Image 1 (tube, rainbow, N blue to C red):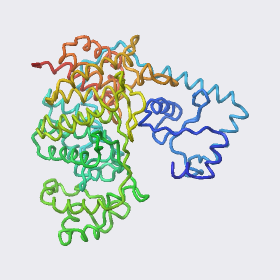
Image 2 (image 1 turned 30 degrees about the horizontal axis):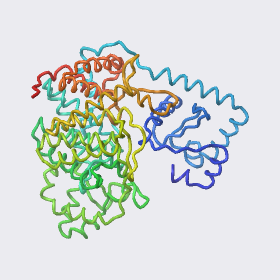
Image 3 (image 1 turned 90 degrees about the horizontal axis):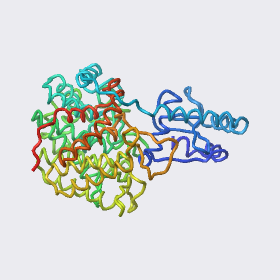
Image 4 (image 1 turned 60 degrees about the vertical axis):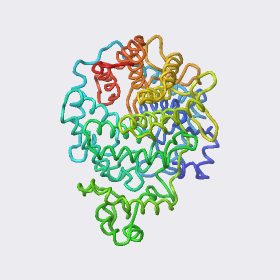
Length: 538
């Protein structure tokens, strides 16, 4: 949309004539994105990005859409016809737009309040397992058809459910998913790391964008699976994810970058795809077997080119070490291509996830470099993204820290500090976790109804002050905070934190009971509360 619509001089004239145009980075300002995505879902019945909102000067929205082309096509309204209609409405019947904006705003405020006072169903964990079983794709792993998102916290819940209940089907769902994701094109077999999601059921064609948070949560999933099964494949995938992050996504100062784009040279996936001729030119005669093993053909599996994958080669899982020399040669050649744009923002929340993953990596694999990387990144956050008064900030780039941190920044970073402490790092990380948790409660906790607001009481006042309970691509801030409260209660004897977690469970119990698969991290936290009872603290 940026390229097609906003860079069109004809559309720019229409926009600038009647509108004040504001472009929001949804990763820097997730509070704005969260609120107006709710508006879009309310008005249209669906959501997504790019998100387009038209609102009054009082920030009350009266029109919402996702992608808008420059001109009418395929049943979609184009900006060239839509913008004049909206401008005419504003000039001729402004009160209708203002009234609609007020009504929508009022409705959003009412619908964002969760029902409280309920209890989790006594059978909620078994119910969640059965729901996942119904959604499970037995042939290719994952849940649902397409597009398929990894949603690693679903896997983490099922692993813990298996560990407690010894339900082999739960473990089978996770293992089948982890193996098929690795075999698919969503996994970068040349340079490692996983893309954001697969456009198809088989995990073949990804949206080639790589996100830090996905790779952090997936590394945790592979590590937990390795702990339970001893399957060496899971260890290797976790190590390769970390190798990718340490090589390509780590700043000289130690923080982790946010993402890599899908496009290069104007084409999605151009950097990651191959022809047989390219492979054979690099590998010589060894290229013939490599192409056969990794599904690289003359016809291609993606727009005339090829995404390396092992979907049709189940024995190929054991090929990696045998073809490591070939992989390195292809990687060296690929490094000479035009690379996708790297989003070099350092986000506190996403860094929290990767620090937690690296700390867990050290606990499981005993490789010192993971602990060192985790400590370096944590120290970077504590030094560069924390004001003198202790207030956490959300984003760092080019020497500049900006935006007051959101509840998710606090929750994820506290999680990482607890993992660091459990990995045997210094006690200062536990103290920092306690201090930041106190700040989280002071700035975000709703004393009247319970739960954490999305943004702090010292932040800019927006249309509403929402709370996030649903586990989407990442776990919700409230869900992660509930786990942090329980862990702090048991590590530090802060029994009042158990009470905070219990308040959160009561606040979100109705939603969890209605849709348990959309609250998998909540269920993980509840399992911890009920079953993780044997702890020795020295």
